[in-house]
Length: 126
Image 1 (cartoon, rainbow, N blue to C red):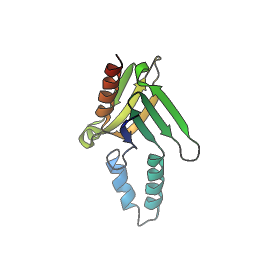
Image 2: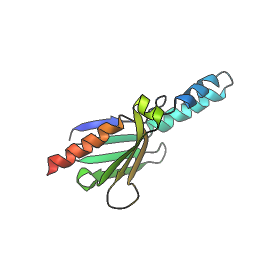
Image 3: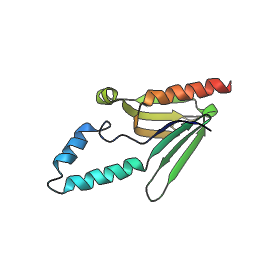
Image 4: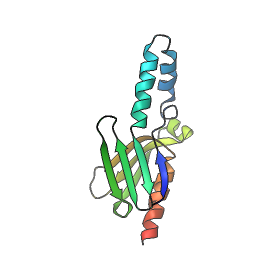
């Protein structure tokens, strides 16, 4: 089982203004706490795409894990603001059967690659 995409949400690229403000607040003492919490939150979320599955894990103390077979994916929606497009990050929504997404992964690097990997995985199965 080859892992084609393994990523955590990006910090700076996802919210550059918030990152800069946090850096400016370090002398006050609050910025370091914000950056540490943000870093831990980002490291606690991970999106993994293999040959035939999509796995999304999130949570630091308690874990939530969603696993979807690529065959059952109906739609992959990418949401990017102007700055997200400049920095190459975005929110990925993966839909299977219903109207609500099964997986929402925000701030992920190279989101269009995820769509391409899912499309390629579906084509390989057929």
